[in-house]
Amino acid sequence: MSTSDTYERIYDLVRQIPRGSVTTYGHIAAAIGLRSGARLVGWAMNAIPLHLRHEVPAHRVVNRNGELTGKMHFETPFAMRERLESEGVPFDGDRVAIDDCLWIPPLV
DNA sequence: ACTTTGACTTGCA
DNA sequence: ATGCAAGCCAAAG
Image (cartoon, rainbow, N blue to C red; front, side):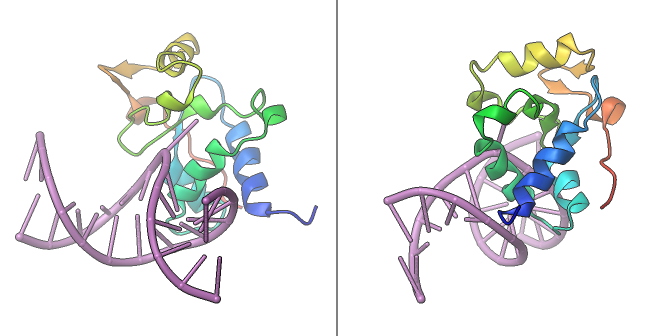
């Protein structure tokens, strides 16, 4: 694989997010070695290949505030919220109770 | 090769 | 709490 390893690492990491938990762009970025590549994570999410759309739970990735910033990039703005609640992710108003279900990725 | 933008984060006013 | 600016990496025009 001589492609952008960064993207693959991001996808591989997001794929490991356990059901019922969420993580943030910053944590993923930090886990792959980037200092503040949070934007890269967001960009990578937008560039997820179709064959990975099923494996990479992008809905479990929220911003530092627990807001579903990427919901508008889903099929519908509600799909993200519904799917998270369906997995047992605690919500606090219109946000994810990230303090209760935050999953920290393994540092590579 | 250069500029702009993006599903972010942090700091300061 | 709200708003603006800077930092960061990669892709697209």
